Length: 156
Image 1: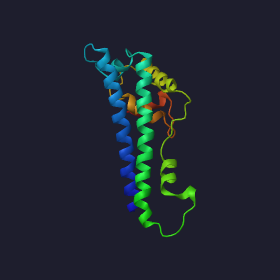
Image 2: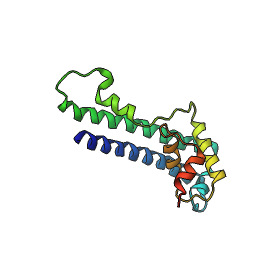
Image 3: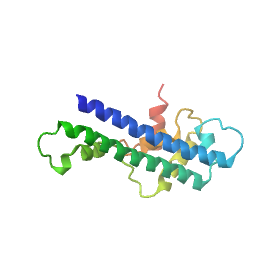
Image 4: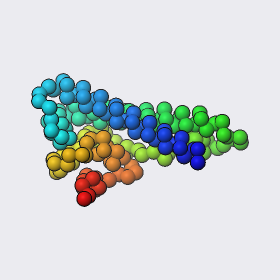
């Protein structure tokens, strides 16, 4: 029971680090471009240059992966106090934690940038579906398509 609480807390930390990293990259990209304030995720994303979109994705992926490693390392450190017998390497808490978290499997950053762009081209009026949500849903699992993401977040 305590292990689950620690794992949930770590998952929260990983997600928070990922979102904050992505927001920093997005804010930096927007600040460089100037202009009037946008009116929603599509209005923010679509005018960005391909380089800025890829920088956002890189920041998100970098933050997410670093957050996973740091969080799972912290989890293992805390769980070692409860480990009284030798454990095979594949069952160490850090490995189990890393395996339980979503993965980004596309071979290139632009695959995610393109998916976000395609989402906003197809669904430009989805007000609450920002790039961090799309990125998390593209991870595997769940590995949703843009149409599945739209359906998930626009249910009434």
